[in-house]
Length: 327
Image (cartoon, rainbow, N blue to C red):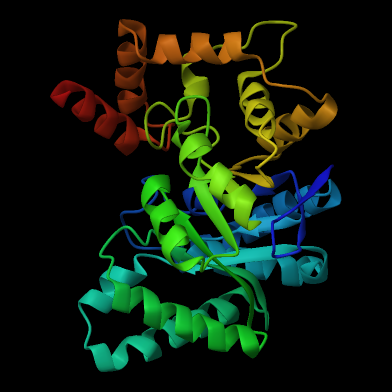
């Protein structure tokens, strides 16, 4: 495992990190909808402990969590393994600005501080290395950003959080905030062979201001929530598609770490093998995947995914079909 510095946070993070959403797929096939079964959560926790333990043993030291279940699961795993001191943990509050927008202004500071304290409890830690503002482009206002940053700054002085970051699907909006306020130590943005906007929109700015870059969605393209690997069967003797995507992303020197969604030990081992050789990912392979996904064969594959009860991305495949039909 190789490491890179996460900008001015000073953290040395593994080139490959683990993202959060996949933790929840172990618990709920439809990902977000539905009520959590706590008995199932606890029953399956040892499997996630093993997955996280293997990742840490392989040198993975950066874990991002978004949903509360992800933070709770990671906290349980790190406690059971005794490995909290070996890793850096990122957390956030989902749709924070939306919550502030629908709450009295007098409660804004309390909402932010209680939210951070809640994540600390779920993670079973007294310190979160990077605390991200989730999608500031949604329900944005200068006052909501200002008060959130003030509260996070106070909690940073108390050493409850280390760095202040932002997680966004809109790199151009994020870049405008950075130009105006220079308020983030790191950013987490989408960047892959299909979604390359961040390279021009925000990477040069991050380099100039020493802001760390975390890449999310390395596989979720060209359809949100559906891995591109569904559209490109492995060719014998060649690099696997997921490995090609990771190598391609890490070919950008501005990137500090890529957070992957991982469901199984076999997926983790395949991803780790991407680091066996240095160099740019196979763009020809990635281009074939993209062309297939956007072809009639790709649309047929989406239909197959919608009908497959064994696949946990049926809702995303259906959404992709509906989106394509409107285009």
